[in-house]
Length: 257
Length: 276
Image 1 (cartoon, one colour):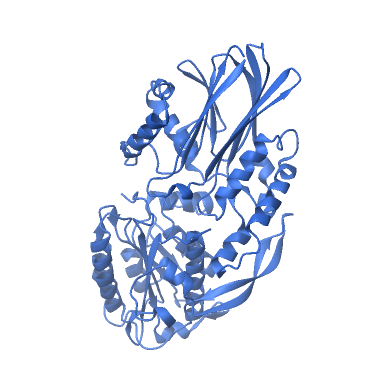
Image 2 (cartoon, rainbow over the protein chains, first blue to last red; image 1 turned 90 degrees about the vertical axis):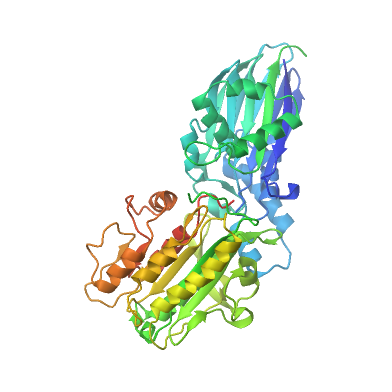
């Protein structure tokens, strides 16, 4: 068993590429017979500052295994310190100081697969805080959607992970966990909220959207799809794909080494 | 409608119309009406600036204007901004007339609150003198917004926040308010909020009512009737985040609410669906 992965990303239309505030990361470790593959995405909240830095710290922290088996507060603590260290010591105007003291905010969704080279299935466990999602797809069917499962679920403002511990008092109640087994041939999609909401909206109308995503050959195809869907009007007056940063990790579990 | 994206290339606009008449020096709560109002506006501007602050500086999602009316009618910014009808939020951020220090309660990380000394920018000082030329103030707002809309016809429509103790001295402003609300961008009509501070002994505290039944007098009714219905998004935010339990017909009208509620009202009025 091995995992093929691709990552696609695009900033919000109208923003520069250096204003992109999502993040993604992956890692592979081999322990004796077992391979551990981790993938994570995060969506830095655009209303906070240095959100891109925070989102990047979270995904890399996840992929270094910092979130495995410990309470989320303990996992976040060293990442918060790293964020504070990098943003500290600057002479800032009043609003930037105020913004910095409230901390940065971000979602996080990560998935870890464990398997041996000659296995035909892999155990996985996933965690999420906020509205970045992971979809488990088998053929043309969505087997599972985590942590949100309908387009309506995106209407609420999600609880996010803050770089300021004072904002994380109730965070552990909002950590979602998921585990299961995947088979060779299965596909997992990690998507930040705008794209995840788009997928569920389209899937609720017509399941052929799954094939559409399977058929994306490269970055050019992905960018074209995003541009088209950002302009496609929905009958309720909005566009199918909300204009936001988008990040998509596409994973495929493949038989063989 | 009311779905245009607010961004630097498609900004929206917030216009305050502030009653600065002599009666605003009357007591209200622990201070005067004028002090409560200037404090609320300073807090709101502070919140707006912080909302638009990013690592690299301020993003101009909003243009902001303030019209004061009392002894005269006109732009009410002081200091460097004096005389300007509408300025990008970044100019406001960089030009408070002073920075006070205040204690602010912040979470301590263990479920409690601790005092922290923070800088509190001040753009407005309380003013109270002269009559209450509300009709003229609405006409001035109409002129300012007509100009803004001609430049930003595709943008989220302007939000007008009018704060008054309600007794117009230059006639009934109903028509002027209607004309103001009739202005529109491609994305919807101007949204007019009236925040009424009433001395009437029978005035109760009301927030975003959907009927005029509990209003104490004709002044309140004129302001209620002149207020825009809240958009569905605003109702959803009010219900989800402030648990106000509003119905679909809720109007952008607040009567004698305490300062915190006024600020909530302002926040609901100025946080459109798609600020990203």
